Image 1 (cartoon, protein in one colour):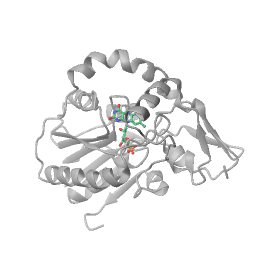
Image 2: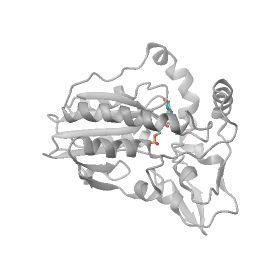
Image 3: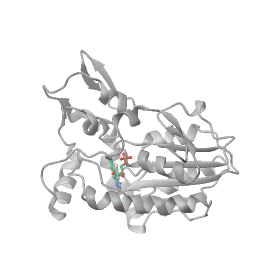
Image 4: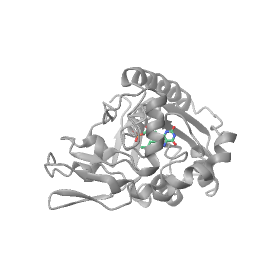
Length: 281
Ligand SMILES: Cc1cc2nc3c(=O)[nH]c(=O)nc-3n(C[C@H](O)[C@H](O)[C@H](O)COP(=O)(O)O)c2cc1C
């Protein structure tokens, strides 16, 4: 039986989740959606999974583009698991619609709360020591359900979010690709190029041993969080300034922004584009 899970991940929460779920369903092929969808089709798969973060009340644009071009088996058991912190928006509806256009159906959808890792906007929260064990429990539950091929209606966009989507999200989506405009390196940069290698949109090239960002950014924070010398600095995009201040004040977060990534996902893990996960691994 062929099982395949497609994932997008910037700071490792979704990749960690995808790996755990692959084990829970008895092993699966894992494919990063930054690869060409024609090289990893799901036409012959019996179980197909999509795992990604919620970005701006939806799924990341490159995940959308990937699914649009992907061939799937319409009779497969298809699941989607989103990682997020507070607002799912239309993430599941987007995937369900993309599948519907291919004659396929989302059999199962569930979201997992993780550390919100958007350090270019606000300090990561809630604390890792609370969230990581909680995340583990949620993954275990989901793993059992999809291992049994359980059916579960996916979460829909809340009425209030639907009403506000266009108004609230327009300023973010309009400049999302250029979140990287405020990124720069300080003199700690050793020119190692890890930032370019972990970027899920291949948005960074190395020029004269320094990263150059090309404005195909999703603001995933991978380059910032995985820089081994913490040399990548950033000015928060204007749209995030108010939101960042509000969240920091409301939740009484420390002003210092830790550069969070999931502790079990290394830069090497993110660089890898595909792997077969064995249940015994
Ligand atoms: C650019 C960006 C936008 C985000 N937007 C949302 C959102 O709309 N709703 C939400 O609940 N979480 C949001 N988050 C939090 C992420 O969904 C969460 O941290 C996720 O687990 C990150 O996954 P990753 O570690 O695999 O990249 C956002 C994070 C980023 C970086």
